[in-house]
Image (tube, rainbow, N blue to C red):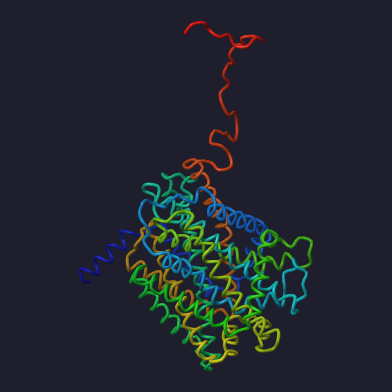
Length: 548
C-alpha cells in the first residue's frame, strides 16, 4: 500500500464516529440480508408495524407538518428572518444554492411523479371533495391535490431541519454539522456526544439510506422502463445491476469531485434541462387549458390548504384509508428524507439569513414544482381524458414509471423528448445519490463538512447496491416493504422535526427577542417579586417639599 493510500485509510479511520458508522452500516446491511433470509416474515412484520404507525400516529404527522409550514411562513415575513447563519458571506450564488437545494433529492421524486400522480387522483379523488372519479370535475381537483402534496409541506420538513442544523452549527461554538445538532437547546451542547444524540444520528443514517435507496430504485426503474417501452430492451436482473452500477460510478465520480465541481455543476445542468422540458411541454401541450387549470388548482390549494392539511377522513367512507395511503405516506416519506436533506441544506447555507433559507426552501422550490406538475401532469390528464394518450394501464397496474414515456410519445418529435426525459431522470439520480451520500458520510464522521473519499465511496456503494436489490426484489413486494420500513423510520422524525422547530423558537426568543409576548412576560409562575407599596400621602395628594 502506497503512502497516499495509507494516508487515505488513516484519514478515514480517524474521522469516523465509530458508534454511528457501525450501527448505521449494520442496520442497513441487516435489513437487506433479512430480506434474503426470510423475506415474507420481514415483510409481514414491517407491514404490521406500518399499520400501527398509520393508525395511531397519522394525526400527529398531519398536525406537526402543518405547524412547521406555518412557522416557516412566519420566518419569511417576520423579524427573525434577518438572523444570519454564521458570520461569513454565502459560499454559492443564489441560483447555484437553489439548484443544489432542489436537486438534492426532492426533484428526483418530482420528475418521477410529475406525469403520473394526478392520474391516480383523477381516477380516485380525495373523499374530502366529494367528486366522482374519471369526470371532468375531477381534473382540477387532481392537480390541486398533487400541488398540495409536492409544494409547501414536503419542502417544509426538509427546510426546518436544514435551518436548525445550520443555525446551531454555525452560530454556536463547537457544535458539529450533524442531525442531532438540531436539538442543541434541548439536549444541551455538552450532551451532543451522549446516548440520545447518538440514537438520533443512527436513525438518521438508517432512514436516509432506506428512503433514498427506495427513491433511487424508482428512478432507476423509470430509466429501465424507458429502454423497454421505447426500444424493447429487456435488461433483466443482470441489466439492472449494470445500469445501477453505471449510475453509481457516475455519482461516485461527481461525489469525489466535491460540492463545487460535482454537485453544483450537475445541479445547474439539471435545472436548465428541467425548465426546458417543462416549457416545451407547456408550449406543445394544451397551453390555454394549462393556464386555466393551473390558476384554478392554485386557487383551490390556497383556499383549501388548512382543510387538506388536517383532513383525517373522519366521518367519510374510505376517507381515512385514502389519507393514509397518500398524504400520511408522503409526509412520512419526506420525514425519512429530512435528516439527509436537512444536513445537505445546512452544508450549503452558511452565510445566508434565515429568511433566505426559508424562502428558498419552501418558496422558490414551490415556484419550480407547481408549474412542472401543472404543465406535465395537466397535459397527461388532458390527453387521457380526451383519448389523445391512454394511461389506463398505468392506473390499473400501478406502473407510474412508464407514464412519462406515454406522454412524450404523443408529442411531435416524441423520441427526442423521451431521450431528454431519460437524461433528466439519470442526472437527477446522480445528484440525489451524490448529495445523500455526502450527507450520510457527514453523519458518520461526527459532522465533518468534507468527509474522506473512502467514507464517501463506501456509502455510495451501499446506496447503489441497496437501490439495485430493491429493484430486483421489487416484483416480490420488496420495494413496498422497504417503503413501509421507511415510513416507520420517518414517523419518529416527525417529532425530531417538531423539537427542532421548538429549539429554534426557544433560541430565537431568548437571543433576539420574543415576537408575541414582551420579554418581561413570565409564562408560568409569579412574574415579579412583590414590593411593598409606598404609603399614601392621603387624599390630598402628594405633599411637595419647600426645600429646593
